[in-house]
Image (cartoon, rainbow, N blue to C red):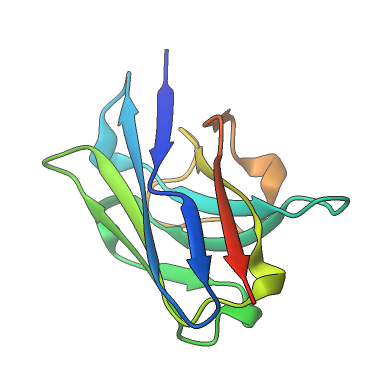
Length: 126
């Protein structure tokens, strides 16, 4: 059974930084794509960033604009999201997502990820 546990959320001022982490267990970590999504109050869950299995490729939502970096540490079974220059409208619950169907690529589509963490709250104050 795949389990994902996010950490690193909290309160930060606009322009500040946060680093989110997701610890995965229950399958061979390095082989498969992983992603971060977010859901703001009253909005749909949206794609933020993804990394393919073995870290060979990454993808970001257009709104990221080079402010975020996704990375994976296969030795520690973790995937991280470094977020810089945060904006108040980026207040949301951030979710880690996992799939056993993609290895050398990734997806920006929520439906392609079978496993989800419980989410971590990020609040950006103005």
